[in-house]
Length: 416
Image 1 (cartoon, rainbow, N blue to C red):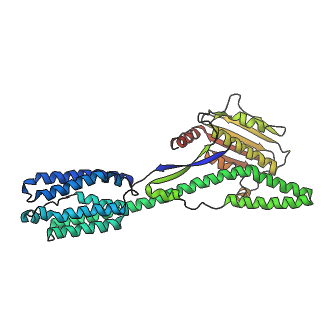
Image 2 (cartoon, one colour; image 1 turned 90 degrees about the horizontal axis):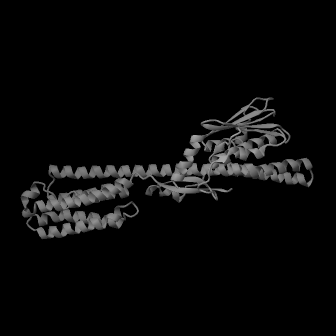
Image 3 (cartoon, rainbow, N blue to C red; image 1 turned 180 degrees about the horizontal axis):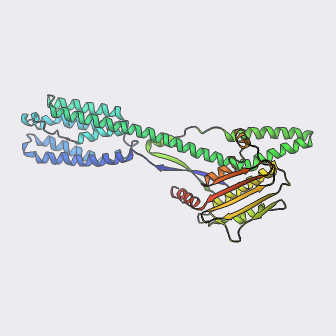
C-alpha cells in the first residue's frame, strides 16, 4: 500500500482578530460620529455640508467592510482614499462649525474618533512605519484645523500616534513569528516525509543493492564489477536520502496571511472506516525454520497505521539479523499485549553489537536502526530499546502505546 503526504493549511493568524476588531470599530465609530453631530445639531451653523460628509462616511464604512477582511484585500489605494476622507472631514470641521468658542474649546471634529480607524488600518496593513506616516498626517490636519497647539489637541495627537505605532510594531512581530513557525513546521513535515521514504528505501532498494554487492564480490569476474557499481549506487543513494533540507516554499511564505502548514501522512487507497488490525496476522508470516514466533491466543488489535509500522520495524530488525549474523541465524519474536501498550521483542543469538557501532552506522548513512526501527516507533509515539551484550546476542524491544496511537490518528483526521 502506497502512502502519500498531504499538506493541510491551518489558520493560526495573530493579526486576523485585529482585522475583525477594526471592522467593528469603524462601524461603531461612524455611528458615534453621526450621533455626536445630531446631539450638537442646533449649534452647527452650516449643517448641510456636514450631513453630506457624514452620509459619505457611513456609506463608505459599510461598503468597504470586505476590504478589511485581511491584509491582502486591504489595498494601498483603499488606504489612501480612506485616509483622505478622514483628513477632509477634519479640515471641513471649521467650515461647517465656525463658532470660535467651540473650536477654542477643542470641540470634536466631524469624523471624530472614526479617524483613528483609518490610521489603525495603516498600522495593521503595513506595520509601524505606515502607522507613523498616517498618524503624522492626521496630526498635521488637526493642527491646521485648530489653528493652535492646545493641551487637548497635543494629547489626542500623541495618543493616536503612539497607539498606532505600537499596534503596527506588534503586527510586524506577529507576522515574523508566524513565518518562522510556518517554516519550522514545514521543515518538520519535510523531515518526517524524508525519514519515511528513507525507511521504505532501506527496506527495499538499499538492501537489494547491498545483496548484489556481496554476491557479486563473492562470484568474481563480471559479477564483481556489477557488485562494485551496486556498492557505489548504494553509497550515493544513502547520501541522497540522509542529507538536505527543503528550501522555503510558497506555503511558508503564506504565513503572512495567517497560514501555517503541516504535512499530514495518510494511506492512499485505505478505507476511511478501516477497523483495527490483528498484529499477529502481520507478524505470523515472519516465522519460519530460523524464526520462532510467540503471541497471545487472543487478537492483538492496533490501528492500521500503527500495526503496519510496527510490523515493518520488526521486519527491519529481522533483516539486520540476517544481514549481520547470517541467513541461518536463529531469531525469536515475542508479542506482549499489555493494557496500555503493545510490546514486541526481537531477539537473536548473534555476536552482539560493538559499542558505538550504531552511532557510526547512522553517521555513515546506514538507516536500518535509526530510521527503519527507531524512526518508525518515534512517529507512533513509542520507543525502541536495543540491548546488546558482546557474545550474547541482541534484543530489540519495540513498544507502542495504545492511547497515543489512537490520539494521533484522531488529531490527523481532525485537520484534513
